[in-house]
Image 1 (cartoon, helix red, strand yellow):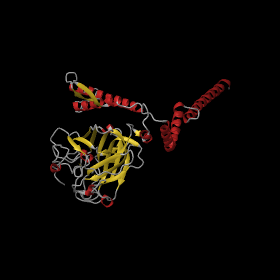
Image 2 (cartoon, rainbow, N blue to C red):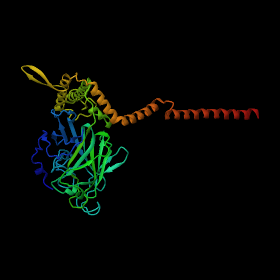
Image 3 (cartoon, rainbow, N blue to C red):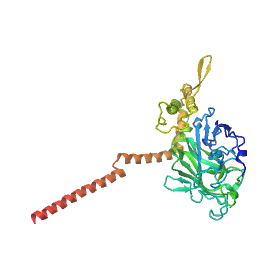
Image 4 (spheres, one colour):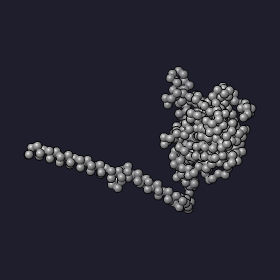
Length: 448
């Protein structure tokens, strides 16, 4: 399998500082218009202890990619000191030899695992064959909970993005240092907006991956009819490989690469908003976008600064809570994150005692052109393109909106109004029958 110390010899794992990495180990695939490589990012730093990929690339015009990419996993193989040699962060950086590696079994010399793990590489028949991996171990310890109440059993690894992504495709490559038979053969790709409950985006069952794919390169899969956006993505593995083998008893993924389309910060369906990016920029709209971004970044800075002051002032802060009333985290006390949030608002250079504005949201607003209005011909061309291309979608959405408005305002032709009429009629009929019965009883006892 190889010694993790040797495989990681070019990284200073004992340093508390993140390691600067430029992604250059990824095999690119052809992208569709609007599609981009979300994970791994093009340029980033790594913090293995926190399992974070940090992007702060001011040269990228798509600065929504900047932020913290948080990774996590059900369990990972590692040294007894808890160093995350083979945690999920390793498979999100485009490597070929290093990746996410699940544990062997409890009590082994190399271990970094949760209690209750029972997987063993040399079990004979209990797991369907000698050494054959089956998700979650014998007791199905690791679970993924779906929004429909169902549960998926199996090892999992995930990443949280700093933005919402409509996942369109992904690729997987098992670690090339050993045992290509560890390629997942029954697995789920899932999306979530909160990291607690998940939606299935794709499910693959492959009889024998070695017979179906070239496992020396990333294997690509497309999401069928992607519509929704998420900021959490997870792979849950139920089975590995198609052939039994004494070493095919763990999950070992070197690359889990994600591709998709940016959803303009929206959560949920986002396909109807893609036309926005195809329209010419019109007068005033660009300024409005810049102002909205400034407001969002200002709120983010205020939150980080308030938490930093609250959590680092030991005189005033006696309960260890941040400004939101939550327990102070290491990020709350990290001045670098506060400075990074401030740099989004304004950056400047100082020369001869004079400050010159050079970047940030305020700089963007000052330099946004406001005289770039479109001509009538451009407007007509854009309008006709949208009408001809998306007219059916617009009509469908308009019909759905009209139906929902009818229910909301209980118009005479709505189902709600019909239900109200039936309910009222039932009540009134019941009252009439009650009056009639009472009158009959009165007549019987007083007149007869």
